[in-house]
Amino acid sequence: MKSPTVLLIAIFAAGLGLAGCDAGDDPGAPATTASAGTDRQQLLSLGQEWVKCLRDHGLTRMPDAELSTDGYLQFAASDGYNWKEDLRNRQSVIDACQPIEDRYPPNAFRPKEQVSADDLRKLAEFAKCVRAHGLPDFPDPNQAGEFDLSGTPLANGIPANLRDQAEEACKSIWSGGVKITGGSGVKK
Image 1 (spheres, rainbow, N blue to C red):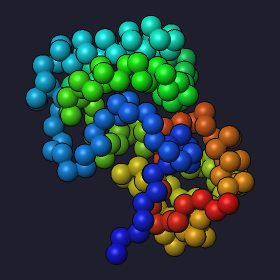
Image 2: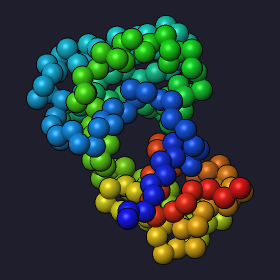
Image 3: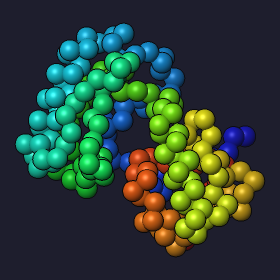
């Protein structure tokens, strides 16, 4: 039996709600570039339409839509602005722009199981920070960008107070999703 997987968004914070910001939820989908099934210009136009909607509804710092070199839609923030975190706290904006999000093709975004080298580097820095701020047994990420707690003292759960401490200290390094495997989640 495989270890249970706990997916925690926004640095150990439980819950989903950022639909469409990272597509590729179907792990069984073939790993193709966005341009394989969708015209790149149409995809970019749709991304720009979504950005305009978000800005019109109050997310004024939302970065422009652009295409990655391999044809996936992305929204690269500058100046350290975390638009995903900002959007996560604005359900009315998410709801207002959902009809546009719903039009994204399934291969619009890089599949989640493909972790970039830059993201792996940031996740390793994040792990180092977490270890320095109360969780010395926190592992480095594997090649899939997951933190496997198997065989560590954290496999039975991460104490909430230590999780909160590490979350606050390390959020500037990595504010995306953190995938934990081989553990039972967060202890109260």
